[in-house]
Structure formats: structure tokens, C-alpha cells
Image (cartoon, rainbow over all chains, first blue to last red):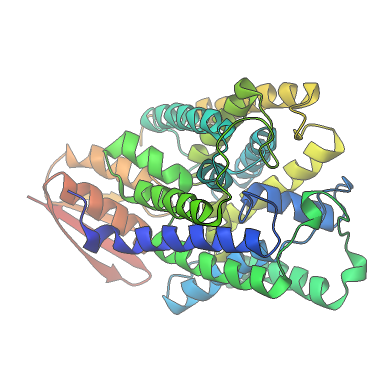
Length: 352
Length: 67
């Protein structure tokens, strides 16, 4: 049933993403964090001082590269379609909630896969939660959930997020003194700017071309028995696993995993929130970033929601650390689940 | 000809809308705004045993599904 002709490019892209993640760790990124959309948006929020948690502040060039790589590929493939206006505020709030869940677990779905490939058993709880969340999300979809139509927008609308990415790059390279840089902790562990930017550009371009999406894989498998996107998800895992085995950095276990905690229940619940929120948004955090670079201003709103969510998480002590979740973080995840389910339930369209 | 306008909807709504519209009669013409839903609908319909073709219509795309 699985034909190479149909799935070859997404499998190959997944393998390249996995290799890029391994290489970025070799070059200085935190372990099991070659890529993490949630962590890196959080680092950027800190880099521009939206929060001041000293260990997670850095304007990550990977994110800039992802947006610009998607932009370049979309323009080259004549797929740069500027659209927006599909419930922007709901998308902002969903992005915010997805970030609350991701920082409970300590990673976006992409980093969850990368953590699994590094032997981090805690990510198994995340995976179960993620799949559960996606299942709940598909129930909303089956019941007619929709954030309504987007419509064509002025060209400027689509170029603003890439322009923000270029602006951040100019600040990072030109006037870094304006930005905050962690001196210890995950934010201080970084691959060289050029390498991180190139890795982002390559992965951004490939993800735009292949529509790689962590939430889409399990979602489409559940809804349509369509395993296309899931093959990309699996390919990333395989590449990261093999890379770690070759380098001797595969450390199976639960305790002492890099930038992770061992509270299974809250790892699970955090990813339930990420799963539901991402299904309602129409794609995982990586996919939102790629769409934001391809002219979709609805996804830009989701990305901004994630950035603001990350700032709140650190300003109000909601984000977990290696020591585990915080009490406020647990309350925030529960509230987040209530909010995403309310957005889901209040946007059911029976006529569709 | 059964017609459906799925332009502007997020993933995977165009596919779900197509799935529902298929029950109302064939052939079905689905209008979408990018190649992503074209590919998604094509994968879904060909896996379900339908004949699928698509063509560009201005900025949009028209997917035609038949037996």
C-alpha cells in the first residue's frame, strides 16, 4: 500500500530533519533539542525581553530560517497565497494554550519525536497524551468544528511575518546588544548562527514543500486511515534514533533526561492540550510557522499567540523545569484544556 | 454536477467536506485555494477508489472526483 513514489519525498524530508536535529546538537544546541518550535519561540520571547527567565533567552536563528525557508520555497513554487481572517483571535488563544501545554511537557511535538529518538522515556507519556489530544480534536472536527473561511488578503499581510523574521536576524547579527542572551542553561547552548540559520532554511523549505506536520500524521491516520504525513513523523524518529545510536548519545531511561522531567501524568496532560489545540489550529507548531512564512496570516496569529503564551509561562512560573511541573503550571494546563474545548465546542457548524 | 466550495478552510476540513459531499452524488467538483488540499483530497479519494483529476482555475484549483 505504501508507495515510494507517493511518500518518498516526505520520508526523505523527515530523515533530513532528523539529521539536521542531530547535527545542531553536535554544534552546540541542548541535547534532544536540535529543533523545538515551542522552546525556540520561548527563547525568542526571552531574547526580546518579553520574559526575563535568565536561562531561556536567545533569538534562535532556526526559527528565522524556518520562516524564510518556507517563504522562499512558497515563492519559488508559486504557492505564496496571502490569506487570513479565519477567526484570528481564536487562533491566537489556541496558540497561547498550545504553548502552555508544550512548556508543561517541555517540547513541541517535533521535540517530542526527537526526545523519543534520544531514548527519553518521559516522551512516551507525551506521545500517549498527544495522540489522546488529537483524538479529542478529531471528535470536534467530526462534529463540524470550523474556524470558518479565510479570505484573500493584501500582499503586505503575508509578508509581515517574514519581515519580522528578517528584522530579528538583523538585530541578532547587527545590534545584539539590544537583545538578551542566556549565559547559562538551555538558552546559552547554541549552534553557530550561520549553521542554525541554514538548518532552519533547509528544514523550512522541505517542510513547506512536503506539508510535514506532526499533528497531521496521527490526525489523518485516525480520520482517513491516511498514513502519508505519519510517514514523515516516523522518518524523523528513525533518523534521530540512528544518529544517536551512531554517536553513542542514545540514553534510554526516565530520570536525568536532558531538559525534561519525570512527572508522567503532567507530561501526558501537557501534550493532550498541545494535541487538541493543534488539531483545532489545523496543524502543529512547526506547520503554523511554515504557513506563517507562506502568506497565511491566520497561522501568524497562532505563532504570535505561542510567543505571548511563552512569555506568560515564564513570567508567571507556569513552565516546567527539570525539577518537574509547577502548581501554577498544572492549573494553567487545566484552564487551557477548558479553553480549547470551549473554542472547539462553540465553533461547531452543523450546516457545513 | 455536484459542486463544493472548500476554499479558505484549514486542514483537514476540505477533505471532511469532500467526504460528506461525495454522498450527495457524483461526479463531484471541489474548489480549493492551494495545492495542499488538492493533494489531500486526491489522496483521500484515490484511496477510496475514485478517479481524481485537478486543474488550476485562476488562483484556485478545481478537483474533479468520479467513479
